Image (cartoon, rainbow, N blue to C red; front, side, top):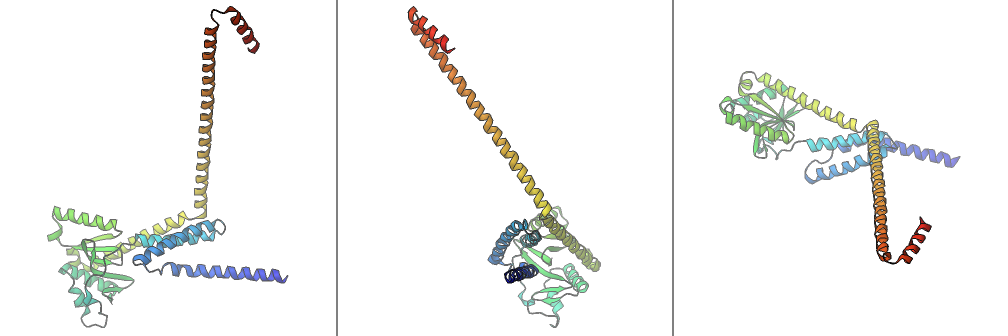
Length: 310
């Protein structure tokens, strides 16, 4: 009885430890160092965890949920677009909300009155304040003049939304439109979403420009949620079981076809061998017939012997 009680206690401790690990897992998954080699190492580790959790899931189905969670964290890191560093305005880094005239320091980075109007609208709409060289507030981060490859973005909202303020003088000609399209396509391929706002909107309806940013952020969030659901759906036990069943049926069908092919080839080989034996027999009989020509006694003896075997 004592051994049984000890065994139950040990099992309970193991279950408790497993529950604690599950509870803490999301914090560890989403707190990896996402720079350089560290991010690559963390992704490799998490891909390994996905494989392990899927295999364990056939014994403990809850592991499929963990596999989906880890897979989504990998997807989030891989799909996150990368910039080429900070905006390059080091003088903004030390600014805080207590710094005198910090708004003017950020306005000085803008390259046109239309960009300045957009900046003021964003500061007002989201209560933005300086933080490490960018502006943040209301769950939003705003960076200015961000380098990405050969381009420099007017504004970058959070990490995905590129905002370009287009003046009619520089963005209305066919050449400029084509150039902007190539730029947008490049950024989209890098994982960004691009929002182009006419300069007249930021100059005369700045609040509307801020609303366009809100709508774009909502669309990005909806896309991310749809991707998350798609990944989670792909790791559902029923979906995995169905995929495995299909794979098993496909393998079984492939084996059946292979067996049928082997059987046909064996039959062909047998038929070929039979025909070859018949051909050689006929050749030998013809050779014997030629040897017996002119010797009636041997010929009669051969015919008599042949009848014994027919």
